[in-house]
View 1: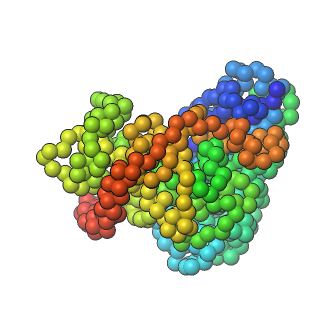
View 2 (view 1 turned 135 degrees about the vertical axis):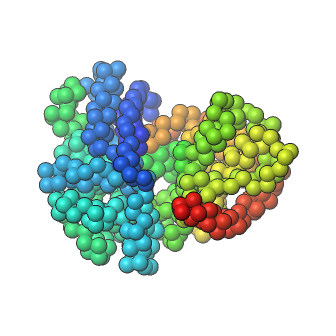
Length: 500
């Protein structure tokens, strides 16, 4: 028997999944590590913590499944996107990694936008946002000149982990697409952009495809873990791309709705080159020569968590949502906009803030809870609407994952607001499953990605739109779409006053 391990290097933890050739999850393990916030708006991690956590995860998996010592065939990695790992000539990190959710680089984003103009969208297909990697490089160049002088190479988190495993440095395309240094359609580093901002060629690692073999686990690591045979390491991919693969999103008429702390509405684009003019993210996929688009709600599940912690810390999420079932569609005339952390899609606005609109004395807690669920879903529908308008997409189904897939009420709300069939996964393993599938494809266990999906991805429940609900939600959504424009200036003014 042969096995693969999919590693998911997330923001708060690293997770490992062991699967066999039938796609059965044999074992899993997780290790947490800390986030560092040295200043307001800063978000960093120690790359050494990623390695420490991964060592522990692999040790735990092998201890629980000793057959892996001789029968582990391949490993691949999914990772948090955009985060900057800056290495010296010895391959050691020069500083903590600057993470995707670090917001110190507003000035650098403006510089990139001003200097590149229309070339930015033409080449990278994305706007300059604080999360991306190029602004972080420019921040280090400006504020840490010694680190900049000593920098020999930059990597992204999962590529750094692959370097530790194999001793080889490279960067995989689906992750490189989130740096603002990649020409997304030509699939190569854009030397015009790098030269424009003084990014030396040697800083840019060789580019590889997701399913490329990037080396074998080094003998010293094999000895430490008790691995007896040769284990091949495959490049892997960006977390959202891997999550989409793990949900079976390999056709253009299927989408994924992921509701975690943030929310994502993601669509497979195949080999079609599109220009969403920065209204949606557009990246290279882990499937060779293909792309995916996605919109982001910055505070999706976070809005529900904030609501619960602020107004009802005692009850569970299950209790709140069960109570929300007693409310009517539209929360008895209540509308919530989930802009509590600003918004990404379709409004790139870090200063917008959330609202409850339509409050009156007759509403109950159940109405507020339902309004939060609906408002999060309306925000994600904004991304669906852009895909339908710009790319003329029609979705036959949406695969719902994350916190939004754990409630029958919320799943029905999604079916009604998206006006599309909703399906859930039988076993939801997220980006780690996609990484394991990449390893399986790299090992040639399957002749096609379709065969791999059929073996590894299983679906469970289905929810269908209810026509009368759809009609009512369309009216409420039309009101929701006006809320940003009606509250934008007020929110900006309030934020300015609070900073005085």
